[in-house]
Length: 448
Image 1 (spheres, one colour):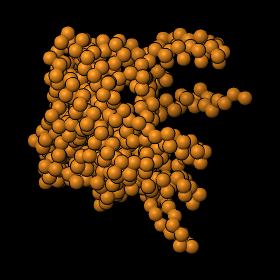
Image 2: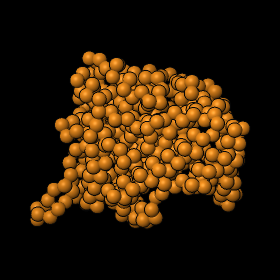
Image 3: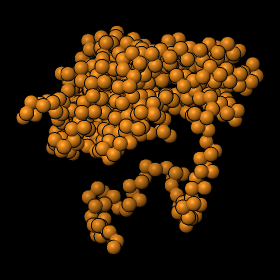
Image 4: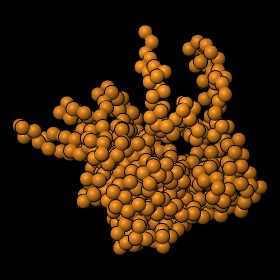
């Protein structure tokens, strides 16, 4: 039986209601070069075995992160994920769980969300954290929207050190409600430049530490300047492990922390799914997006968990909702919580220190190569270097030698004028032999 919910008249009426004449009018913003003028050129029919063989052959062309020396970062980091994490999240009661619409029968889900919130609050140095968002970039967007609600102002000033993809994602989300964004030019070490841009109409200042170039910055003075002007400070963190070694955003005066939690418990996984961390000050809790799980006692005095705050439009009246966020990346959240539980505070600090040590060793090896200039003075596990050649071309040449040397900044921001800048990351998975191979291969490619 075919399911055809809409008649041609229904479609015509819907298009008329939004002022469109045809379905094609809905796609006018898609560049013509990106549109297809016919069906995709794929075989119409193939057996399962043939499909598996074809896809396996295509996949074999990839150089996976675990198969070659790997130094890519730029917001997605290769860390070791203990086997315990995958074992636990694949238990049926976790793998099939979803939003706790009926909290009284979702105690297990609510408990791990409560534990997760506690871990994130401790990690970020903030009083409260929600039960996660999609990823770090959308967490930043939600933070900007939240700041406009709190301050009743309409402008966000964004540091030139914030990841370009986070900036684009935020601009995409907030422009629809008329929020103005001022993104400063890309800069390796200029987080404090935002201070000069703070005005009476500034709702929030957004900085990142470590920033996209790896520079770690104490943003305390930026927080003071923002607060003196009545604005909020949003601190973005793309590498969650860094908070195990550096001063927490809360200690530096952040009002909102928007972070990516992929580094803890979640593998690279071809780009997702990831898990957005979001924390704030207690006085702002009513404006926080997403969900908040709380602890209580039942009628018998036994410990229990409840959905204390739910501000998304599916749970309350749309005009009262702070966000239309529709998932909290629950399974990724659980993976994060399990890994954090295995590490503990001591384990996280040791892991963070090991990351820094590996990055320092990598920095020293590359700095010794003639023509290579290290741009990042203060870093955690990632830094930027300037090469005497186009960075993207060098990366391609090194990939041909089975070395994934890093991420060209031009890939993140093609128009930034930094075609010779390469972002290099090292983690606990980086071997000393990998560092030697990178240095040797880069020297060969550069003719040093």
